Length: 399
Image (cartoon, rainbow, N blue to C red; front, side, top):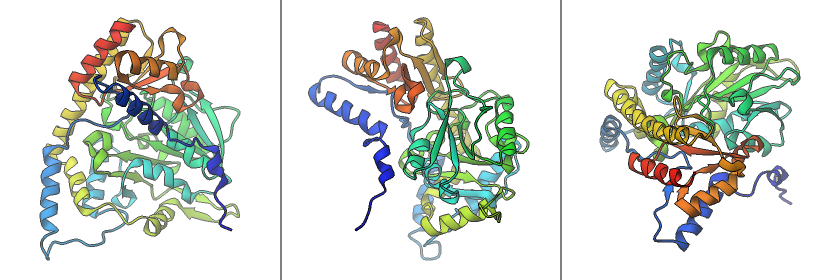
């Protein structure tokens, strides 16, 4: 008999955003005359930049010529993109990353879910709550022990290392999804020291690093001394360059990053991830990687900066509305997410239903990100400016 993985019994039958989509579909079917404004899922609305599209068109033309046609590419990514990413780190964070430490993928979500292939199931996983669901679900599916560190209003949703818990693998996200909170260098220094003292590994999700405008805030964990000895970093082109429909991201696994097997044999995590990817991943298409390379060109950077400023203006509109109504929130400055407290002590799902039914606005219930998200709600700045403005006018009318 082919037995199933019974750990799947311990995850919700439906992914958070699938549940939201079903609720919204049911409402729109029953009320086809209502204009529903979606500010829940973190999908972008602006198109790919001109620099990216031109690079992709050129790559498509190359695929139609025998001399420039590409077949199977390297699973780790083409050198031209790995080198561009390496230069980007030096320019923006003054961090030295060798191209061989860069692994191109089809998105940060995939790598965050797959990276634990190279770690033992016996490891204890430390995860902040509230949290991006993939961190939790991917480990529950493998039956790993998970412990949580509380993020709350009291600590500005920036939890620090626990004094009474020893963990082996730590998930951190900054700017945070869902809360929009951003760690300072001193915050991350404490986490790096915790990881080094426990011989642990930090899995650092930096998918929203390009939204950081404050030069004093770190955009990479590798800005912290010692981080290369304890951290793997994950980045994405989805929100920074609009690649949600084309799928591309990258993961940094430093050469110096090594850990031991249970019987004491030292292994290189970079070599292990290389082996994993060459076995289970066929690489990102050449055309997509040429588009990603163009993101780092002078024109590409200017164009994606303009797009990010557009979304940050949307975030400002949301933040101004909540401020005028004296609603507690964080995020929205160095992040595209606004994490607000549900007015009147409403539960997250009750507030979701109220917004959908009364003003036809969709957000994300905070409890969907963990127990500490109950009573909170996430709004995203990835809508159009017109829809964001209209949604906030509607929200103002009921607060």
